[in-house]
Picture 1 (cartoon, rainbow, N blue to C red):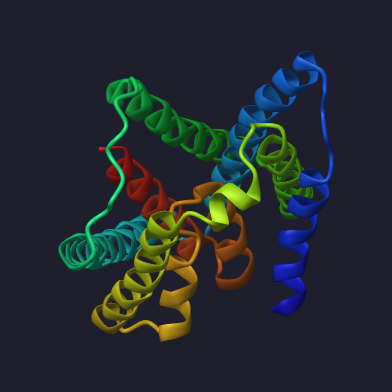
Picture 2 (cartoon, rainbow, N blue to C red):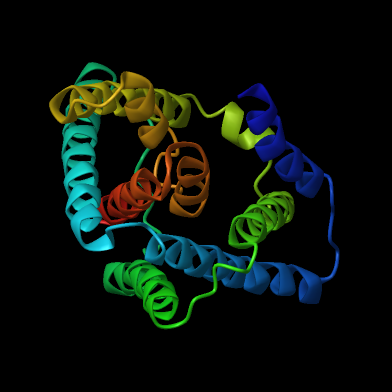
Length: 238
């Protein structure tokens, strides 16, 4: 388990140590990052296509994802409401122009179509001879490396993040309430608590959770984790 955590953190750390002075290279990293996300989700769709009894397992996938999403979201909202009442922020809200919610929602929904495309291709063409699991792992490592590079060159420094008391309070509240919600969902689903905690601990990072949970707990729960995290992202945007 510790080795898995280190493998996740290592590419991020290495990427964060790479400074880029060229605007062209930074743009290339940003574009490559989006393509890697699509590749990982497409590979995840291929894995899902080869799940035995896919038709019956789809009902399990959506049931687990739905219960997880509902329980975690409820606990998140209640906890954030409590935090706002108990310790309201002292800074003023930003007046900057916010991106279009419809545009952000459409970008997120496109990810579902990519996974669906992988499933359809897998059902039509038998590609099980390919090392899909290994390809997914290497694609994930490259994605994390690119994310580290993007973080370093986006103008945001770790000092700005870690010394932001209100932001840290929100993050801690979301983490703890997500775990509480996942334990509640696991109880309702008759699932081991460890599995519930694993499915909630990516906090909306669907391209990470889908691969990691599928690798450890199987493609059914991996797909449920992806849908759960994608739903969490859509709710966060709204």
